[in-house]
Image (tube, rainbow, N blue to C red; front, side, top):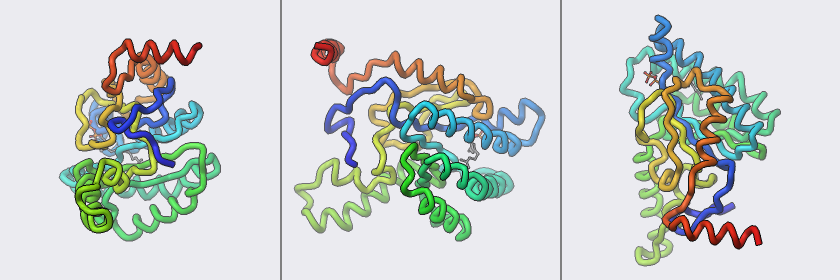
Length: 257
Ligand code: FPP
C-alpha cells in the first residue's frame, strides 16, 4: 500500500497516530540514579519495550518503531555494546512467539551486515515468521542512522531508477521507495524520553511533518499512562502540513455537512 507523502500531498490527519516512533533514552541514567550498573537500565528498558508494544497494540496503533541501537552507538564501551547485543538476541529468541500469537509483524531496519551472522539469521527468521501478521507492525531500528538510510537509498536510486527512467524524470517518490521504512506511513508522533530534545540521526526523511514530543521520563519508567499523556498531547496538535488554520476549519465544516 502506498502512503501519502507529507510533502507531495496532505495526509489525512486522524485523532490517533497510525505510526509512533520512539527514541528510548535514559536507561543509563535510570540505573545510575539507583546506583546500579548502566546495563541494568537496558534490562529494565526491555520491560518497558514489552509494555509499550502491548499498550500500542491495545490502542490500535498500526506502526510502532523503536530506536534500539544507532549507527553511532558503536562508540560506547565494548562491554555495554556486547550486553546490548545479547539483550537483542534474547528479545528475538524469547518474545517472538508471543508477538506472533498477538498478530504483530516484526521488521528490523538498519545495516545488519555489521551484526554477527547468528543475529542476522534470527532477524530474518523472526521477520519471516511474522510477515503476514496485520494487527501492528513493530519495527526495531538496529545499527540504524538516518544518514545511512538516505545514503543507501541514494545508491539504489542511482543504480536502478536513474538507469531505468533517466535523471530528468526522477522525483521524490522514486527516491523514498528505497528508504528502509518504505513499507510504513511517515510517523505521526515521535516520542523521545530522557529529557534530550533532538532527533539523533533517527528517521530524518520520514519525520518531515511528524509531531515531536519530548518527556523527561527515563525510558524504563515510560509506561501506558505516560503513553496516554503523549497521545493526549498529540490530539491537541493542529496538523496543518503547510496550510493555514482557516483552511482546516473550512475542511472540517465540509466534512460535518
Ligand atoms: C538509550 O539510553 C538506550 C539505548 C541506546 C538502548 C535501548 C535499548 C533498550 C531499551 C533495550 C533493548 C531493546 C530492544 C528492542 C531489543 P542510554 O543508554 O543512552 O541512557 P542515558 O542517556 O541515560 O545514558
